[in-house]
Length: 164
Image 1 (cartoon, rainbow, N blue to C red):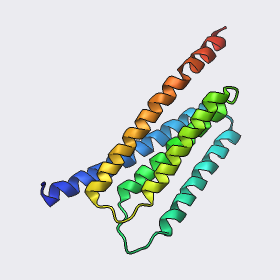
Image 2 (image 1 turned 120 degrees about the vertical axis):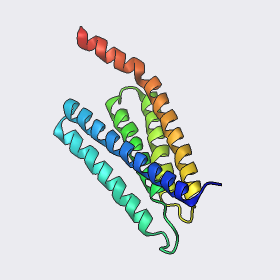
Image 3 (image 1 turned 45 degrees about the vertical axis):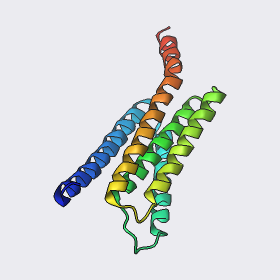
Image 4 (image 1 turned 90 degrees about the vertical axis):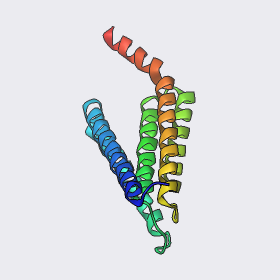
């Protein structure tokens, strides 16, 4: 077993890095979307993001106040909402590809759902929270890899057509 000081430091670092990753991903996506889409599409995307966060807070507030809510799981839940909405945004970009749209919407739905479930879990210890966060982030990374593989050829086709 580790000393309580190292355990607290490790948990704090996990919270800081998770929050930092969420911030970097949000800034990157906002920059990418602002260059390629109209302001109407950006406002719709921000509205969906805001509604998701409000629903997450409602679920969080409905939990009993006597339990301990690890901040780390809340941040991981926000990651799930972020990446889930990202998958749905990609599905909107590739509407003509029905099978891929269905798969992207499924990815987005599972990311959002699991994120909300994790974020609203109460009574989880810090070590369990770090373990659950690590497993969920691994799941999100694997899902992002599959999304990249799924859409790689479509981006290549768009680039080739743009060069012609």
